[in-house]
Length: 492
Image (tube, rainbow, N blue to C red):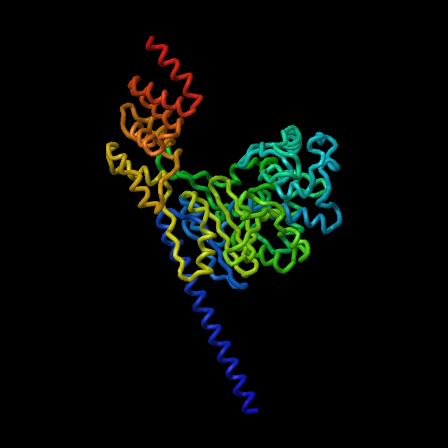
């Protein structure tokens, strides 16, 4: 009996010690992630993050503002546009129909639409799901104009294929809009109603849906962007304000623009993991890497999810999405039982798209500390311009390298700002300085020489303009030829 008591005591002490160790580890992880995000917040970062490990939520927190004007902060309950993270819901809905025996992924779209042209007649549901249909992305990415289902179908069937169906991967929103049309046709329900009944309600998602859901406007995150012309941050409003009142927006449905919270998206992950909405067999089918997304074959597309491997060769199932303002990233390290969900409502730059992956590195490497996200690059340049005369323009790249902790290598940024200034400045100042700096940084870009030539023309420096347009033509800028010829004729 004494031996059993000693053994039990040892086991309890061991379990208690392990529990304390895990708590301390998770607390340290929370502090590290929170410090990274709070440091980024001082530079304008705005969004929400949830991190879970082995079924325990380590961090679920908001940063920055959902509504700056009314001083409403972001929180785990804030509702965001999740962009193309929507596609996993559309794919899951299609697979639910497969489970119900109503469709097959091998079905051809011509079996549903008699108007299907010959070159599209062999496109299958599988190919729509995996972006291998060959259809072009003619419908665009961020359209909120009023459009009927019939308008979309007409445009879809009239579009030219960029490749033979089933032969090449090319991401196209039109694939998932078409899947939504098929879903409604087969189920007899609207997309929103089907998702609510078969996905959202079983998973207990209370704040997820399209415009038809009764969102509390105070919980909706506004989208913010830096206005280059006004040189300040601007409020775009919410997607709900931009969608047509009659919900007749068929360039938006199915491919993106579902709204959700990090709390709901985590519930969705748990529902998938526990086979609440789809069977384990169906989930395996959904998370199969069917087609490579890139030449290096580092990522593959499944059904509404991208599949890749970590540095440890463990499986990652993820998808991100954006409408140009909002950006969402849903990353599931399924073999490691780690989930990172991140959504932002203010685009600061490319690095703000890698927040979830940076946090993933922190989860698996306690010594990793990412550099905080810097301010928006246009904001940084405007701050430099306000505190420096244009003669100091050549100091700008070093300033940006220091602030961004990275080399400045974007040809377009100074060009855009140059044109914004060109509209305002009657005398040569920052517009001309920015264009001159840009051709010095990227001398082989003919378009930039064309821009500098245009600036010289505005300021009546014709000889310099001719030299710039000549250089632009030499570098292959076809659009510069006409202007150059006109200038040379005037000299005759």
